[in-house]
Image (cartoon, rainbow, N blue to C red; front, top):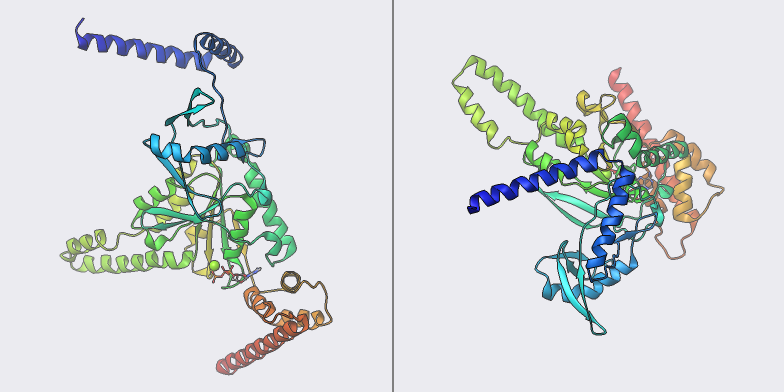
Length: 433
Ligand SMILES: Nc1ncnc2c1ncn2[C@@H]1O[C@H](COP(=O)(O)OP(=O)(O)OP(=O)(O)O)[C@@H](O)[C@H]1O
Ligand SMILES: [Mg+2]
């Protein structure tokens, strides 16, 4: 038989085998397949002289990282770096040192009490998603904060201390948001059942210093998700945007801060383009020149690219994802972006109310009541002050940390803000007269 014929023959045998195996897996009752696997494994162990021990990286119901696995990784670190050709690098938990371990499908030889053994690393992807739901207690899983520099993500360890407990806002609304997030993270089966990608969009809006970024950090801490801080102005075009998104992992929050500023570019460009098109109608010679320009420096993410990002197919690459936009000016956003159904939840973060103040006082000053609270409550009703400003006044400035002193400084600031607001409204009134 010629080598060419032999390959063709071999190819057809492999193809037939694959076909029968696929049929077998597909149509054979799964119980029988399990039995088949069990007996074939036994048969193999009869002739296979080695003992195999498996250490899973994530174990238990909560899928914590196994201590044994970490210990083995450390133990093998030096052997792996001398024997294996492909290595994985990571930063150790204390963020101080680099740990090298062998990559998947690599193998290193070792000896223990005169017995030869081989350490091999492999990957086993679970078919069904099990939800790790260990929230705040999960110290083992190190979360990451990714930022995009052009078309690449780079990451650092995410260690923001913000939690929903320390986030000052209307308690009822806070409960609703927490409930919404937890429901989302448990609803994998539900999303699969209704045929929708497992994702949820939030739009956080409100003046600067009202806790939008803080809330995002709290979300990541609550759910144990990684954060992808997407800087749209660094993204060259829609293709690059898609590439970045496909690279995001499951259990993550994709954040676009100040969406109005990122979109402003597109807004301006659209206006410019419309203007140019008008001119082109008058003078068709300009058209060629205009097209060249638009392919050159104007290649940026467009609104439609961004909408595709929200609704798009990329999000179906498995796993749960939150998409969060923030803005200071919700009214500036394109209606296409804020229409109902596009972002699932709109959350307004606003000026500091009395409930929010009480939480800040509890966190910063460790007090739950004070004779000055009444005055502050009244002043807060009449003035607009952000939680960030309130927090600034309650920040410890001396080692003695006298609560009364801080509360008085807050009252002063509130009275000043009230006066200024009054002056402004008087000015407006006189102007309109
Ligand atoms: N609701 C809040 N609860 C607790 N702390 C807050 C809250 N809002 C603001 N702060 C404090 O003020 C600082 C600034 O808040 P943050 O960065 O979250 O505001 P932002 O709404 O994202 O503002 P910007 O619109 O300018 O991005 C935070 O570091 C936080 O300590
Ligand atoms: Mg912010």
